[in-house]
Image 1 (cartoon, rainbow, N blue to C red):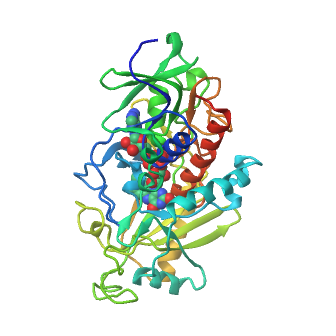
Image 2: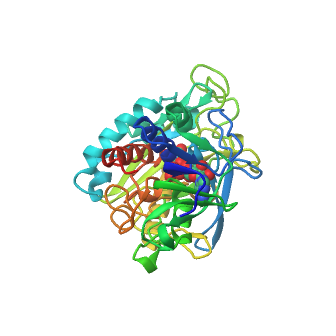
Image 3: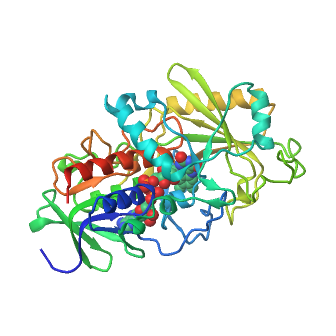
Length: 423
Ligand SMILES: Cc1cc2nc3c(=O)[nH]c(=O)nc-3n(C[C@H](O)[C@H](O)[C@H](O)COP(=O)(O)OP(=O)(O)OC[C@H]3O[C@@H](n4cnc5c(N)ncnc54)[C@H](O)[C@@H]3O)c2cc1C
């Protein structure tokens, strides 16, 4: 054991889960150090997804989707991916939690209520693209919550403000690996080692480095299939196809209710409404009428038409993270066929015959799942002093974006760390 810096709890990553965990543990009296790689601040401008080429607030990860090569951006800043994401906040439905275990509907509901008090998502008016989709699927459209107050994005860092409860927050500090007491891998984790070799001791380490970052830290510290932990093998995503809208369907003259070419307060939410289509008992897709062409809200993107997304919300396929860190998204043929069929149905209903682009929802999760790598309280199985509380931990993706769920689960897991006074 070396000397140097120490905290009761080191939380790795100041994304949504890390901000919740840092705040709640500090409120409970723990000396918390929240360590975040990013240095630059994300723009507070609501509606902006600063994930394009040249962004200073994302890390990029290689991914494959069949033959396609993708570049997955993840937020690298206070607020994590939640500071650069689409900001749509939808809670899971009870059926989404069925396979999580009998306690989860109650635990989730309590966690969600706590998260809702802090984030307070609001609704936005329906724009012209959503109105088109709503007209094509009468009675099926739902409004979805937005993490914004007017023109300002509300990040988890804004909403939970861990430093406001006394947590120490260090930016520009990347954890390279976990430290093991006595050098015994998978025994007791007693701290972390940073990129510059600085060591920080801790009674408890909570990984909140995101679905890719947490898996990398676990495997890079010796926790993986060889220790009986299937890390990075249960990757889940919502695959998406983007359908081009013809230029004449909507023009820049199309107006939002209340006037103006965009929503009343600056950039409109990219996604204010969705249509959920149940295809068969087990298959559901989400139709996403993106309010504006993506290059209007993602700086640096090549101009492209307005698009509607069709995403499979019930994928059966699981991807994996390769030894070199490449994320191999699932290529499950059943999922691909269901999604293609749904997209064809949407295109037919809406009279679209333009290009279709293969894409993904950026909803990566499940790389260190509860029930497989973690116990029900987020403790890494068989290991002391180490927990995971971020998107990696989700046993399965809900049929919606995971942001709100990550926050709700982090709230729940924080109450367990506190109840055990695990530091
Ligand atoms: C472009 C994009 C759009 C999205 N849109 C939506 C949406 O509209 N609705 C929705 O529900 N979901 C959306 N999501 C998904 C949602 O943002 C994520 O599910 C959520 O942010 C995951 O939170 P997290 O805490 O698990 O990890 P993250 O948000 O990824 O945060 C992890 C943090 O850990 C830090 N970190 C990583 N490694 C280390 C290390 N070794 N040392 C120190 N720090 C480290 C990172 O810099 C980052 O700040 C989107 C995601 C992206 C990328």
